[in-house]
Length: 95
Image 1 (cartoon, rainbow, N blue to C red):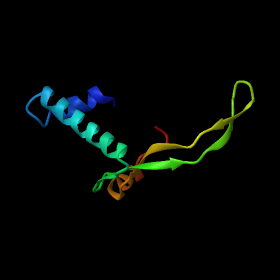
Image 2: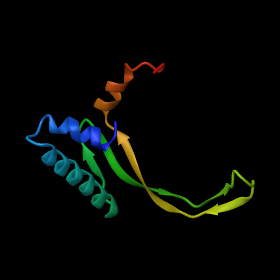
Image 3: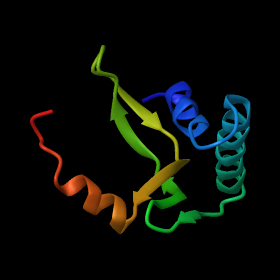
């Protein structure tokens, strides 16, 4: 499912596709701004979005095999909530 598919699904519950797109854009922008302020966003039953700090490290260029330095960075992280984990338990791994 991509963003357009998500908007179509939300539009079924709202009055128009335009309202659905505005709602989804607002939610995504709010999460992005909160993470940009080093805040976490917790949605009960769904999960938590937060900023994780990745340490600097040495990596390898897969094409040349050359060692490269990878600087420290802040990266977004999503931790699923219990309800989401429970919903995914019964999925077949064959799909």
